[in-house]
Amino acid sequence: MLKAGFIHVVDADLKSYFDTIPKDRLLARVGRKVSDGRILGLVEAFLEQGVLDGLEEWTPEHGTPQGAVISPLLSNLYLNEVDRMLEVTRNGKYISNMRGSQTIW
Image (cartoon, rainbow, N blue to C red; front, side, top):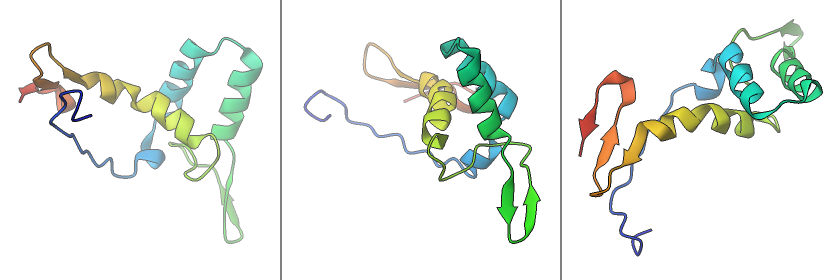
């Protein structure tokens, strides 16, 4: 990346990311990319699966199960919006619109 002229690295820590993804918004974004209702149904069933904690079973209201096979794909699909917030201008400066305030480096 240095050979390509990139000189900045943006490092952002998303606390509890997998646990906080809104399921309805995630399913809507998946629906924009996938038109097969059977696949959408599988993704929804995956998000609504129960969690076994000791002998107690519960269903999380938000998020995607961390460590599950499809979770990285779903989280990257949802995180794509953050990638769009960090764009490089023609003169190489970064424009960040994270948290609604625009910053130019």
